[in-house]
Amino acid sequence: MAKVLVTVPMFEGCLDALAAHELVAGEPGSEPLAEGLLCGPMQTVSAEAIDSMASLRAVAIAGAGADAVDRDALQARNIPLLTAGEALVETTADLAFGLIISACRLTPEAERRLRAGRWQGWRFDDVRGRDVHGAALGLVGYGAIAQAVERRAAGFSMPVRHHSRNPTGAPGYTADLDELIAWCDVLSVHVPLTAETRGLIDARRIGLLEPGAVIVNTARGAVVDEDALGAALESGRVLAAGLDVYSQEPAVPTRLLAAPRAVLLPHLGSATLATRSAMLRSAAEKLAGAL
Image 1 (tube, rainbow, N blue to C red):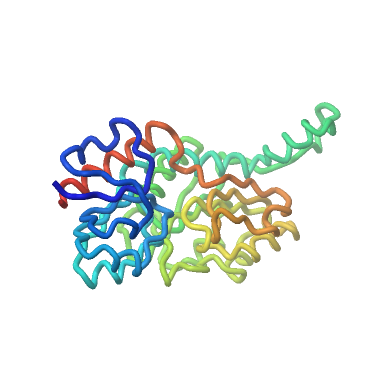
Image 2: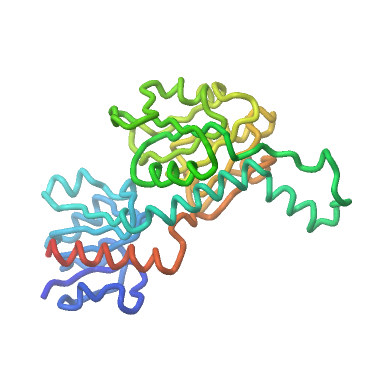
């Protein structure tokens, strides 16, 4: 029996794969004798926390992203890092495409006007967004979630291109990111946060978008320059943005909170009961296998 430190909610049935082990609730590093660590995708696991667990043999993330984990510290001790990203692909793609629709059609702005009593009935010039059907969709990154968004886009007759660091061999691959950005009407971000992708969509690249374009980010907040995006929304250069992630969560930049036509969600990409449970089960199964 191994001792497993669990830093996520222990929902009934989700951690059955670890039933043969002793589960201890706590924060990363709080159990020196832990041989396994099961934590959430946004939870910081520092080198100090890793060093404090001398018996640690495996770490499992109940999600896709592992940028909050000090991977160098794990690699130095040859400790495997396991993720459960396959469990959240379709649900996150649902939300990403929902943000595309909501941002393009300016639905939050329209709802705010209605709730504030400022809707005066049907008018030709009332909250005019842009069509989703037929809009050119550019995908930054081409992992499982991006491909799931592409499948949804087919139902809206959207031409789709994608960019990734390495050629994919798939139709629509565009080697030059700048070319992709200049081509699309909707830019959807799907890359992990690394040293190379931090600030990838910066002020210069936002400036390459056609006027009236839309930006959606369901990956990691720091991939997009939030201040530059706020400025582009203020000027009207970018029609709208749909964001589910931020660089300093749970803080949301004041400029984005005040920006017009910004659809802002509190990191809900995988937030359904079925998917969150599947994420926990997958992480538990992989950690049990490693132990």
